[in-house]
Length: 110
Length: 112
Image 1 (cartoon, rainbow over the protein chains, first blue to last red):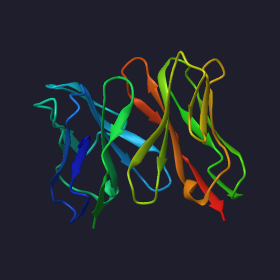
Image 2 (image 1 turned 30 degrees about the vertical axis):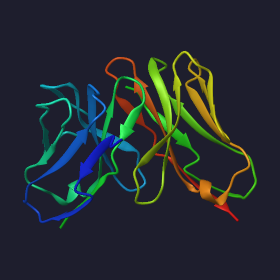
Image 3 (image 1 turned 180 degrees about the vertical axis):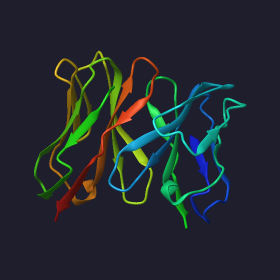
Image 4 (image 1 turned 45 degrees about the vertical axis):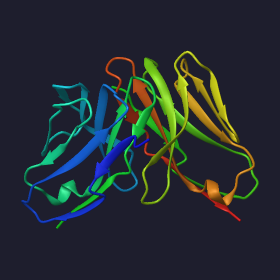
């Protein structure tokens, strides 16, 4: 069982570069989420999706974009990377109840 | 707006002790509450999930309780072991849009 798969696990970006964090789930979950976790803090919701073709902003969406063309995939796009986006990013999926998480992507912007 | 608070932020206890971690939330309109474990540099492992209609859940040495009316949950760890050292996070799922709202976590250290 793959569950939720995130790639890459680590990435260093230069200021102004762009990248896409990939997230795939094989549990046929409608709900998918992107969170960021800063050191010593809880997770903050960036974007979420309640199904294919539907996305909505969370608590900290600025500087990010998402799309949900299929039930399985929920990529997160950073267009112009800034040092403030240095964080650990987690993707998750759920069907209203228990949430399942990917292993995280550690992103450093320098 | 739902807010989740975890106290204490850090806890260090000798091996073998029973301990309680606390989680409080401001809005009782929740769908469920989950406790997670996070090891340094790793992802999140779900420990226990309590539905809003439940009072407690147990898994091995772990017991989680939920009191919606007072906005509190506790995670009880019996006979703690060094392998229990990790950060423990609680998260509340809202019943309006099924988002998870997170506490900042309790960093637990079990001394051998």
